[in-house]
Image (cartoon, rainbow, N blue to C red; front, side, top):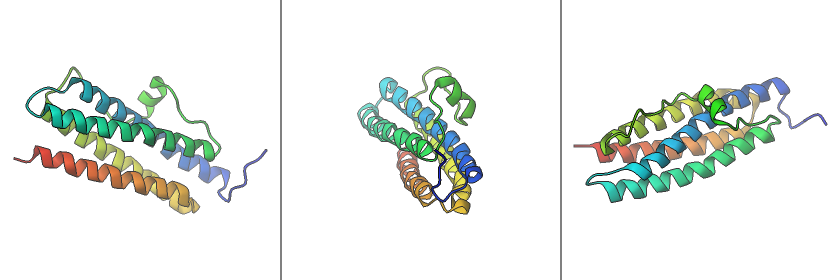
Length: 156
């Protein structure tokens, strides 16, 4: 059955293209954050271990929301490491960084997700896709706040 939700097929494909990239960045950030939770050491261990757990739990829930939005727009969501690796702009770590480097890496990765959300927004706005715009706006707010909090821990 053909989809008729008030957003034409071409616009839906543009939006989904951005959401696929956004999903891959979010999933990669989730993996990085969860790995840091497992491997953080040093004097900030308890603070960072707890913070990273809060962040990866929130990201895990966001992944589902983003993938379900892609499905609601009539497309299949990317669902494998190989697909995510092709789509993401977030680099994997080589080894296990020190705690402060973890924070710096997560600031950069969250900023990447923020930029991807902002790049996706115009296609949704042009198509009048309020649901995607709302999703992106909520995600922007979370990632900007997360980045601010991590920058505060890095301040001297």
